[in-house]
Image 1 (cartoon, rainbow over the protein chains, first blue to last red):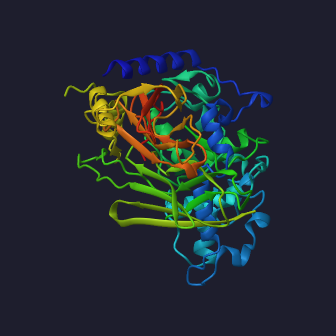
Image 2 (cartoon, each protein chain N blue to C red):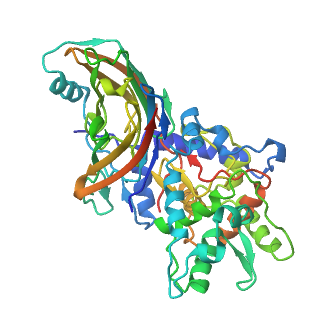
Image 3 (cartoon, rainbow over the protein chains, first blue to last red):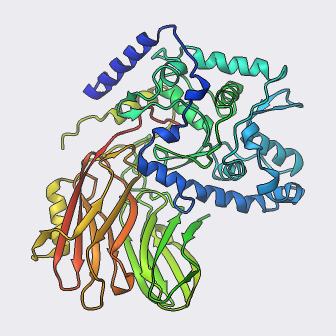
Length: 261
Length: 106
Length: 154
């Protein structure tokens, strides 16, 4: 093990011990988007629509929105019209409960449900350029709007599962999400600032990926980071965690397409 | 699908220095990465970006793999006359993309 | 060439051990400051390079070496008689020293260009301004590059 990897392991162990069984929710007023913890240059990249690489995905998504597809030969626009009007507020409410599946689905899954059921078109693969572009385009229409997740008898059990996952220690490093993101946000982990982990900007252009990516991709990165086996894309465990994270970020503004290191 | 974002003013005064921003979608594969099996992933980058103003070249960038993915440039040119700004990107594997923007100069 | 196993390689190989497929980003034997000097020589030939007139703006600390914003400018009236012909950017520890060459001219109005570059390591970046009178000017900037703490393995 190289010196740097050893130091990282030690640092994480200290974090783990210090965080033992104490997991305090961040008070609502103290919540900060990862945007505020980034460097000035990265923030500038997000702020300028003509310089934000995520906007390339949004542009692509706009084209896909208008493209006729599937056995029905219908475009999203044929049913949903102008996305700027009809999709406003949608991303802020997702993951949302689906009556047929009897569980919450995230925005990517909702788009694929529309494709397979309404357009009679094949579902788009997770993390495919097309699905990311469509999701970014739809989510962009909620930019600036507060996240607003419905909590009722139907969604409560899934929210609870997501919450339990957030506070549960897992992986070879035996770390819970809360130990970094509730207890140590703002501190440095191997040179990078730990954010509070609010999914306000998804799909996000992550500099590490050099491309747009979904929240599930980020969650899987984290799971790999703590040496846990990452769930497959679309797994209910991931959607439950997404639901909890969005609820935890309730009231915070959507920033899609965000830019993050 | 290559797509690009151009930001250039559609109007300017004669002699004014205008700022142009261009952003194009391209992975800029460096040629230094290896796959899981150790095979080198071949280089695949944009090599050249040229801006012409009514046919005259006013800016050129010769790119190497160290230009970040989704190449972004901000440069300036003098608004000399009304007409068309043409942006051309070319690169490995026959990559070619062109965008235009019109400008009215009074 | 002896290459210190980077943390990135260690963690990626650990992830690979979990049976997850991935692209491994292996930083190869990188260029040396001497190779950077040779690359600069190719551009300037035997002409002297004077420090000054070029301004290189880079963040002193970059959160991710994949995308580092860079702005380079050269003091010049940009007239047909006296202007910047080109600006060249070099690194000393990337796999190859050349980053980009910008060709300008009097129609630019202003010798100022921005872009985003990749930096494989904490290192010094050099910008060379080539003027219409054949003179060369330079500036350098040092950047500390940090890596993402939680690496990917999609």
